[in-house]
Each structure stands twice: as structure tokens, then as C-alpha cells.
Length: 328
Image (tube, rainbow, N blue to C red; front, side, top):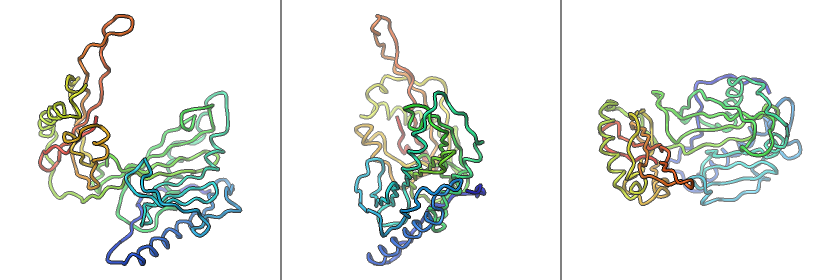
């Protein structure tokens, strides 16, 4: 596989629904999905002249298909296709690729065993460029969604368990606004083996977002608003436990990000807060606190210890200073 050329931004797939009838929409979606299968076949997942699927080309016609209403890891309904050792998932009714896995390449990479860690053979920028180029296989149209230039980390044990395996790069691309502000929950990941090539990708969320036309409130104002919001979190059902008796350590910091409001103080527990994330994202100041529960704990040896400090985030609307939620 030839080295990939960098592109300024990665663009996810978009499908215009318009006023198409259901049958026309379904036909258009399936046609677009077929294009992705064709792209995969054209590339044939070659890496250093290796074809992992010589006898079983990717085809929407010979793929086993199922619809997953609750995939367990995402908020979207999923159409899933299986072609031998490969799995590809689309957001139901669209051509938005959510996940792809080449199990043959994954297993070939993970089944190698070494007694010691094997250092990377590539520089980070090579892994990022290959991942960026490979993601273009899943791109059909220009949706206007942008991503950063990407970053990668080298891992010695895929999944963090078992013996040391051959080198695998995990490459991350964070979605950004037109002004370069990062999204908190929107990103793409690609796993790239130095011998097998790219073997899996995953797309997280992809929120609805309109570029703001207002000037955000200042960081100082956001920090002042967050003081009151933090007290509300501590008094809420979700924070009345350990957080109710916790105090901030050090000075908080704040960063402009694009988040999914979750109305944290109105939720009954962490699970409810996670499920309450809204699809429509907002520009917000994310205020970071280190909170420590001051309730003493008696250790088995009789000494008094305290809980470790925990990270708490409060989301402050960058337009009006209202609390949008947070995370514990």
C-alpha cells in the first residue's frame, strides 16, 4: 500500500433525506452502501501486497444482514453486514458507517507472541497518514464535518491483555468546528497494524451542530457561573453521595468545547445522565474540578485514609452562562 497523502480534514458520510418516500430512501441508502463495499473491494485491504479476502470479496449481495435495535455501545440503531471474517455496520436507514472490523487481520496481529515489547517500526505521522487515507474508503459525499489532524499511540498488547504482540497503532481523529474547537464526544478511531495494515474503524456519535454566531462569554465569567453550578450538582440526587461531602482541590480550569447537554442535576443516577445526552450539541465552557471526599475511611491496618481525588466537569453554556450538565 502506498503511503497516504495528508488531507486537511476528514469528512463523514451524509445522506439528504428530503421528501423521498421510504422505498426511494431505502434504495438510495443501499446503493450508497454498495459503493462502500465496492471501494473496499478495490482496495482489497491490500497492505504490502497482502490480500486478506481473495476468495470472498465484499458484497452487499452476499453479506449476512441483521438490524440491531440496541447495539449496547451506542445510541443509534444499526444495520450490520457480515462477509466471512469482516463486519461492517451502518446507521440504520443511512450510509453512515459506524464500525468496520477485519477479524482476519485483527487475529493475525494479535496472535503473534513475543517475550518482550517490540518497539514501533514507524513514526507516529506514518500511522496517522495511513489511517487518514484508509478512512476515505468509507466516505461517499462531502458532509462538511471536520476533524483534526489526528494523533496516535503505540500499543504492545492489543486489548491490554495476553502476551506482547506485534506493533499496533491506535489513531484518533477528534471532530472540530470550523474554528477548530473540539467536540467532547464526536471522534473516529482506526487501529493500524504495522504488518497487517488498518483492520478496524469506529465512529463515535456525530452530533447535530450549528456553528454559533454569538461571541462566547469569558472564561472568568464561566468559572464564576460554575461555582454555583457545582453546588447544584452536589445537592442533586446524582451528587448527594460522595460528591456532597467533597471539596475542590486546587484551582479549576476551563476549556471551550462542543458538548451534548445532559441536564445532570435532573438525573437520578450516572446511567440516567449518560442516556440523557442530547443529540444537538452546544458550544460550552467545560470547567474541570478535582474533588476529594473528606469523609475519613479506616483502613484494614487501622490507619485513617481518604478517598482519591475524582474528576468532575461542569458544562456552562458559552452563550448565556446557563448550566448544560456535566460529568462525574
